[in-house]
Image (cartoon, rainbow, N blue to C red; front, side, top):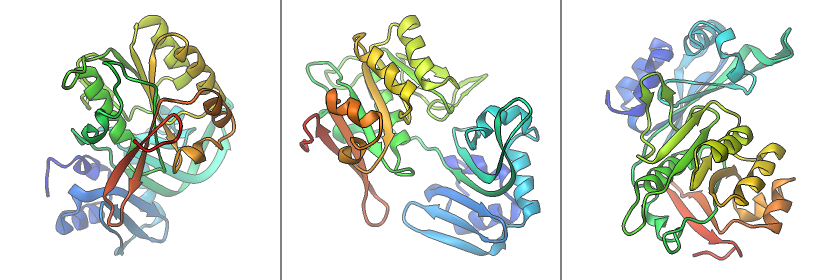
Length: 304
């Protein structure tokens, strides 16, 4: 077992039988997701393949024990995350959940009777953005930039690396003050000891704050040059973006989608971008075999 692999951090939360299989198969370095479904074999999604562990069928008891582990044996303590359908684990890894949705006595949406769980591995890949950096900066300025990809293609990993480079500077580009709104706790993984992921020496992180509220707070309090956030899309997010783009700050955000054309068809976000497009769109594509590539578009939809 490679103890330096980020995926190893999730091992204490897994059923021991599953952990032993992963140890024996040597899959920790390439593991991207591990999926549990009641009465079905465990599914592993790795960089270059996916497989089912036919010898490891998940029982309700096994799934309940795993849920108790990831929730720290207190579902109530995780209720704010659970209403969004996930729990963030140490290291920025995220466990998505499916089951029966209900509303508790305080009007908060919750999930119980868990039937499925997907643990996604968070990774740092220093340097993964270098191939596109020179296509983004203009005269020591960073234009509004949107990262687009379907779920699971690595947009959060690319976002982390861009934040690091923009904060520390590279080549002739001077480092900028970057304010990060980390609503899900994935980008920096803030703990009492500090941040698990290095995001640059000029970066300030607001952890577990709703994006729209957090972005406006950062403008008022931290004097940023760049504001970064993951998975924009709500009406409140769009209204906050309008304010930020009129304040002199640049935006670096991610959105789910296959390409700029698909994003332009999203209700709310699409009409706004047609009226005021971003200067750069980074589209992550997955090649056959799992390798990723990033294509850069300008505001007119031209590939750079």
